[in-house]
Amino acid sequence: MFPFCFEWVWDMAHAIFFGGFWYAISILGAGMTYCILKAAYDTMNDSGESHH
Amino acid sequence: MDAALIPEGAKRCSFPKFTIGIAIVGAILLWGVFAMGLIWWKGLNQTNMNDYYGFAIWIWADLAVIAVGGGAFFTGLLRYIFKIDELKNIINFAVIIGFICYSSALLILAIDIGQPLRGWFIFWHANVHSMLTEVAFCLSAYFAVLTIEFIPNILENRQAQKVPFFHHLAHNMHGVMAVFAATGAFLSFFHQGSLGGVAGVMYGRPFAVREGLLIWPWTFFLFTWSAAAFGPCFTLLVTRITEAVTRKKLVKDNVVHLLAKISGWMIVTYIVAKIIDTIYWAMVTAPSLGFTLSHFYTNNSFYGYWILITEIVLCGVIPGAILIMKSTRENSKLRLIAIILGVIGVCLNRWVMVLQIMAVPVMSFDTWALYFPSWQEIATTILPIAYGIILIALAYRYLPVFPQEQELNPVEPATEVE
Image 1: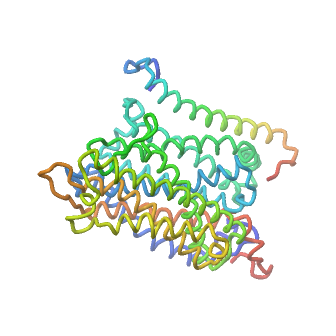
Image 2: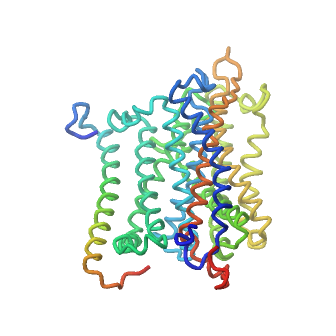
Image 3: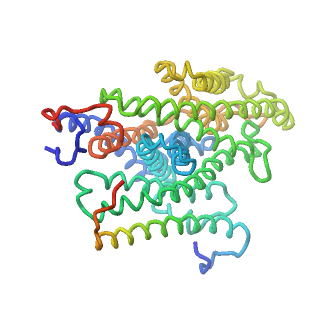
């Protein structure tokens, strides 16, 4: 549910539940976006140094 | 036939032998899928759930797999946040086990809700006063974390590594894994806890209800603690089973001893807290609601004091004691007994906190309500086990799951890869 949905209420319960949920999802999304973009960049500028 | 996909320097059984094994387990899986189809097609009348048992064997299985899957978040926390480097040798497998456990939990929930097409309602029409909403949010998000943690291992497959983008992606994901592990620990703390919290706030169920801290009953903390304590036991148990099936040593003893030691101390601290909680509940909470301890353990054909003693002493105190003492921990037979008892103990705890709660009579005119699941419920509960075996078999065969495998099992060049 998003704040612009008709069911949304600006109260503490919605803020905590959805705040925590979107916070976690945002971290995961941002982390994966960073990894994918950096992988694309590294692939285009492949120096052959990356290893693990 | 599939030699090109098998990790370099690793020896695996022949493809036909592997296929036969998968087919046997696959038959069990199909039995579960058939039962699942029946339930989705015909509805929850295929189960033995009733007005007493709105929560039944599925919810027990759900809570049990989530508890034993706790090894993934706790091992990840130790490896990436507390920087315990030895655990890098078992973290891949812990993640795979966690992935299987959490995907199974979500599958069971998808069967249990009866109307899977409305599964998204919990996100869109969320009841923000329910601990189960928090569980659904955290469970889904944590499954995403486990998927992210599993991806680099998949990308390390011999053929996938030849694709430069996949190679770089796996490398980059390893680089930021601590962020994902920390998010996973945050999510796990809340969903493990809230599963216990659900029982602890049932004011109409004196067997379950507990006092607590602010809005959280003590069961909230006990559930999180027990998952962190017994989850690694399950990781060690599945590792041991995999070693027995493959007839190979896959993880060095020092890694196993370390994880067993951490698990042992977590079990001991948990079981002390659990004993205090039980005594307080028996002496203060239940009497204040008009019940005596004997009310919960007598006058029925199944739930006796044996279940309380088995859970706390046999499957709590004893495995904890074995795992914290060096001499017993490093004895492979005793350690195996301890981790088996530990896994049984946490599953028994979830059984008690789901099913015994429902069985205990609450009203003065009420009687004990015992329940036995239908074959469809049993089949769909066995389904995740078959799925787990297949996924572990595939991962072990095609992915570099155990970094120490080649060192522990050197392959002669002439016999390399069948």
